[in-house]
Structure formats: C-alpha cells, structure tokens
Length: 97
Image 1 (cartoon, rainbow, N blue to C red):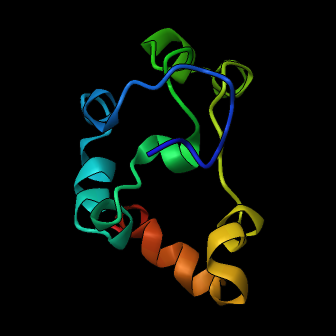
Image 2: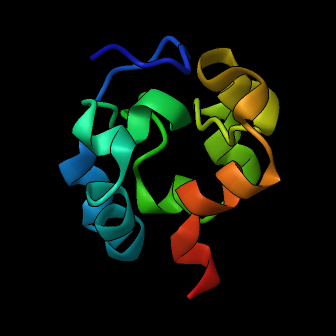
C-alpha cells in the first residue's frame, strides 16, 4: 500500500521500523491499521532517508528527512469527524504503557 503520508522518499517496510521500535510495532501489529495493510510508513512517511540511527535520534533531522508526525487532522483524512483524541490515543496505545 502506498504511503498516505506522501513524503517523496523510498519505503523500507515495517520490518525496518521493528528493529528499533519493537513496542510500537507490536502495538501496530494488533491494530485495525495492520489488518487493512497500513504499515508504519502509511502514517509516518516512507523511511529510507530517516531510518538511520543518527537521524532518528535527532527529531529535526528526522523530520527534514521525511518523518511525518501525524496530527488529528491527518487522521481525519480517512476517519473524518470520528478521529478525535480518544481515537488518536487508541492508535498510540503503546505510549500509555
């Protein structure tokens, strides 16, 4: 599935994200997004240019290299008005742990 967060960068796939973001990957794996074929890059942008550890540890560099940090407005592109703070919290449930 193409990235919904088009950023003009190459895709690396969820497996590349899992190497460093295991908790997030496990949370995503059990989600409706995963069941619909939406991986990390669908929301966070293709990661070929921000996957390097030296870039990921620098938020400004990661964003400059294509990392997208979705907001509720981004979620509303697909979910419409039902994308509220509660929905956003459920998608990012791993943060509450």
